[in-house]
Amino acid sequence: MGRFTHMFNTTNTQKRFLPFGVLWLIFTVCVGVELTLSAADFGLVGTPAWRGFVYQNGGFWPGLWRDWQPNFPAQPYLMIVSHGFLHGGISHTAFNMIALFSLGAPVVSRVGPRLFIVLYMVSMLGGALGFGLLTREIQPMVGASGALFGLVGAIAAWGFSDRKRAHLGMWPIRKMVLMLLVLNLVLFWVLDGQLAWEAHLGGFLAGLILAPLINRSPAGV
Image 1 (cartoon, rainbow, N blue to C red):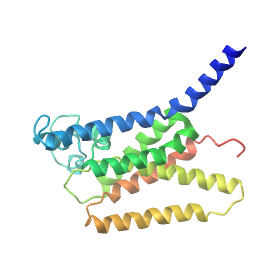
Image 2 (cartoon, rainbow, N blue to C red; image 1 turned 90 degrees about the vertical axis):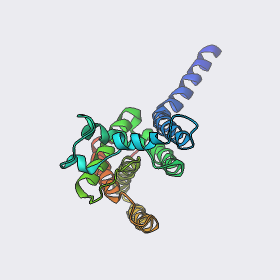
Image 3 (cartoon, one colour; image 1 turned 45 degrees about the vertical axis):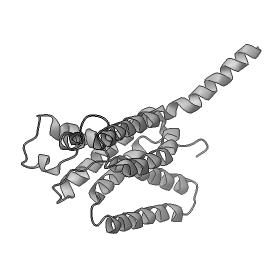
Image 4 (cartoon, rainbow, N blue to C red; image 1 turned 135 degrees about the horizontal axis):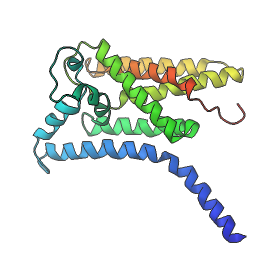
């Protein structure tokens, strides 16, 4: 009986931690790519030209959805995904990875790792669509922010439905959206306009729309 109980407790522990493996997988890819490119920047591996080559072929170039010629046939499609695993330096990567775990943990807890992946990738697509359709920039976009804002959109959608069902006020949800708007305005000013707000908007809307379709209401709600 004691052995069975020990096995049961071990299984519960694994079930509690294994779902978050999807967050560690995304983290490992993003950080691994950035560390490699940073090492190349300092000549520790390869050459400093590696970063430019990777951005040229893996960044999201809006012109490729217009009249630009791609470097390879699949580039206009692959860049929808590849741009989300590239970043503009160590600080950019660190900021997004902190956001990934802060936002991703409650999302994975709610819908599980498989639906998290669906939400994350659809939000990444939404961010790419927003940037590709709205931007006037000719520079490439890199970063996971479109997908991350999709997680924010999903959390906002679930928070709204949960609070409505529980007959609670909506001020916390409105405050969160207002804070996001202010944050984007501040970052736009600090970065002198070099902020892919179009991707943030596209990702947020994608998450907001998809969230009710994949929702798994918390127990008792």
